[in-house]
Image (cartoon, rainbow, N blue to C red; front, side):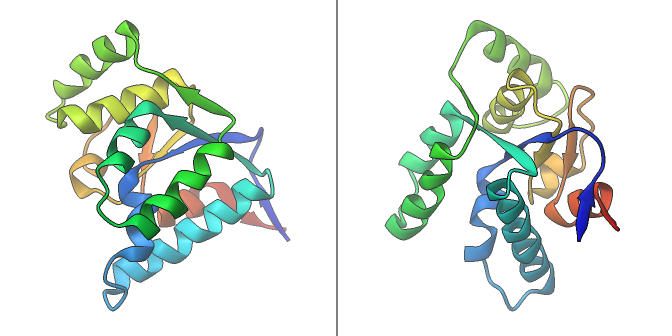
Length: 152
């Protein structure tokens, strides 16, 4: 049986992590992160974690050229316990985050996650993983599981 530390954690999975199972699975990192991401989603369904969604997820999904991926990922919006819309606060926060040399679109995702009071921002994007954002823990799916899971 798996036990997770403390109170139920709220997660924001960005589009990179949602798309990881569709990446080249012959690469070990992609495969391991895909398995970890699928496990995280299973734990969300078991209500061990909460999922947050945002208008940025909707925006990026709109431009996803692969209808199967778009349909599968968009189903998670209905599972999310909170969905964040654009606001002046999010735009201002994203502006600050771009000061960390994070692209505007990624900064908007991070600002949405912070606005949704997420504990973790889960991504597979190295450009985001290599940055420290004080208001939220930025982590890849594998390290998220290492940080939160303990055997009983």
